[in-house]
Length: 170
Image 1 (spheres, helix red, strand yellow):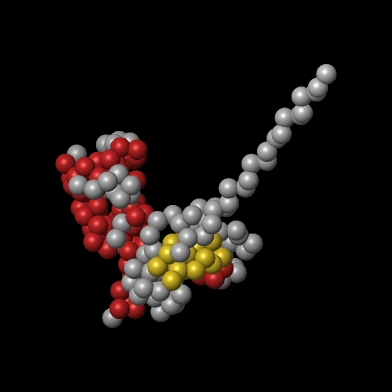
Image 2: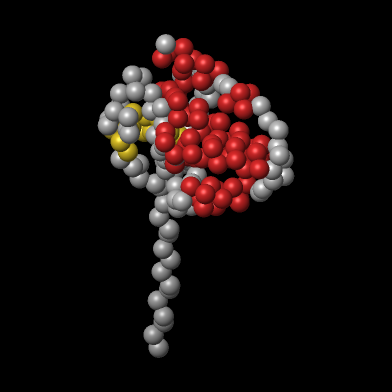
């Protein structure tokens, strides 16, 4: 009588993300995976495992994007200081829309995609470019205006980072 051999069990491989090769849309430099301390120093989040894709021409070219924790997938497209500020402004408008009860957050991106005439993934703020972020912000303002929500655009769009950027440009 022959015994059946024991079933083989296979260990699932760790699905660690392999870092991507990203290029800076501003200067064409290659983006390198760096720890958070490279950008913000050791005093910010000491011992953090957070990583960023940073342009090789940093700090002259101030383009970078954060990674998802643990798998090194970029959270979006590389952005300079101006685009990062405009993305934050867009997220503030989204919070205003959600908090005023106009729309659920899960419905905002399909609305942006439909009004902008783009795919759903490209409608997300983190994938926006200098051109598309202005269209997204205009759509978000239109949603607020059409629903009679009062807001101070200067307050929503102000930021210490923005003021530093303007001072640096002058």
